[in-house]
Image (cartoon, rainbow, N blue to C red; front, side, top):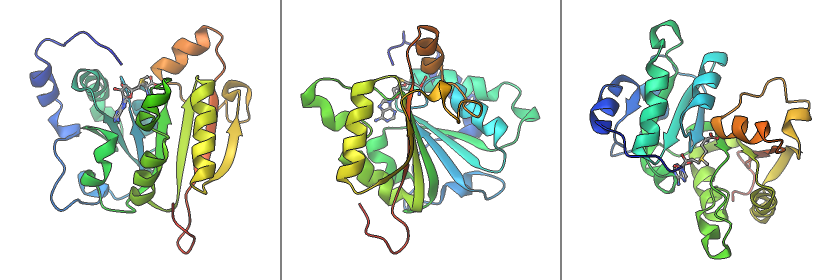
Length: 223
Ligand SMILES: C[S@@+](CC[C@H](N)C(=O)[O-])C[C@H]1O[C@@H](n2cnc3c(N)ncnc32)[C@H](O)[C@@H]1O
């Protein structure tokens, strides 16, 4: 996501310190140490301006939510959104500014229950396939941080990325539990919380693709 450089970005992020996980610790910890109550951990990677994470955390208070974004100025918008009316919402949402490729530095293995990838950059050029967040290299990282039997939930407007992702899931032996090529007209439409990109694309008449992918259980072969 491109964004004009924010004035006083560092100070604005610092003002949201109470909901920001500032650094990975050594050794890595369970994400639940950052919340007042232990709950299943749901994590969005590439949260952009935060509508989805803020909406999901408000709707599903039985989980703790972590939103990861690699661009600080974009994360700043999400953080400030989450700070609004924070005191009247459940205390179950934290952010971190970092790159998914370093995910395992932040959290203990098998400490996350569900990962969400929403409208991830498609990187359409063939030479950039490894940067796609559903490339096999990233799936291996998710496999190490997800608990056995954990779930990955993908939404995208990009058919090429969707098809590529299905190929990668199959190559890693992952089970696609549910998929649709038109989320907004599927049985999951009512429970769907839209992201900023999703609202934009669907206003233009673009269909939304989605897949839910189950990772191996305890005694099953890992990726
Ligand atoms: C196309 S935007 C979508 C934003 C939001 N999920 C939405 O649907 O509105 C993709 C976001 O993912 C972030 N991103 C891309 N690669 C990332 C990575 N490796 N680690 C963390 N964030 C990443 C980008 O900075 C950008 O904000």
